[in-house]
Length: 419
Image 1 (cartoon, rainbow, N blue to C red):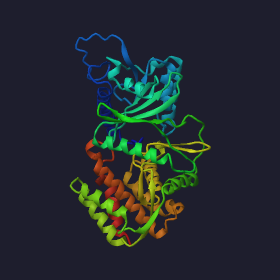
Image 2 (cartoon, rainbow, N blue to C red):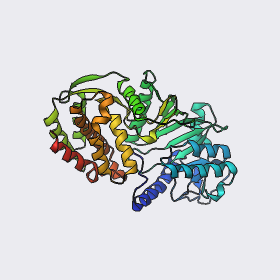
Image 3 (cartoon, rainbow, N blue to C red):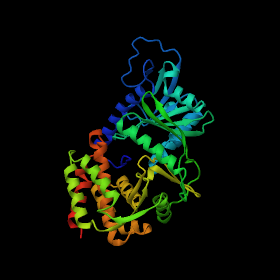
Image 4 (cartoon, helix red, strand yellow):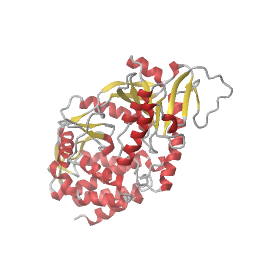
């Protein structure tokens, strides 16, 4: 989940602290011993002679609040790394991004970007060396330093010498992130054989393991092309195309494979904080509406404004690691609505409430009857909450990791009032 731009100051400060700590962790993963760095927090060269740097990065915006490491060896590559690494969510963010790009292109970046990290050591031991071998191409890396969350992983932008972004790499480094990287690899391979109207999906360029970490390199989507307005109708049609891309099924909630799998997931998190309350709400909902006939299809799993771009001829959609089959139709529409509201509203509980209220309108393009719309929305909330608990988002320091502060109270109240 993307951090909320309107988060209170103390949460923004904690986010900066966690990113700074994560920077050191990422450098140690991508450039393991005998490599060493100069300029990063915690560096201790211990009298070693630096020699030739195998990687040289500028820190955007600085070491106290790191968000991106961009290659310092070329103005063109550095500017391309900033220009294409993410989708600015708002006018101010876009203006800041464009100011950094202009400074890099003009050679005036020293005025904005004062922190620099150099890496020394044998190239064969680095992620750069590995990618050069498996891809057969000399690419520069830009490294995204993401916000605190359980599913955070190194994300690498691969840039050719001429400034073209040729791909994006992800590295699964723990049990959860390794599973997610493998899941995204499988999803992209499966979707390469599906017809999804008006949606462009990355392709797999490489999949493998490096030093025990799961690696996926996928093609770069052309996010730099001119944008087009996104209508609600076009978004819903694209999400419906994903829902239908692998076929559908129909049946009562209580006898569906979906409900069986969801119960297993809830049982697996019953001992977590809020887990028992979540499972109780799910059982109560099934007791009230288990005989409701639902239609099941696929969903992207994290279709949010920051995981897509709108062009005239297609919607570019990335981050398919949560792609799942056999869920109630319309989950993507509900997820997009909730994430959009959370992004701009500091009251996350109110965003949940409004999303459930709007469920009949959001789910109409998926042919979900009005009588089943609220049920579908509540199942989506249970599904999302089970994900948060299974991933241990609260323990990872995620801003919305504690469900009892926003999602769970709304869910429990809505279930108790259901029918």
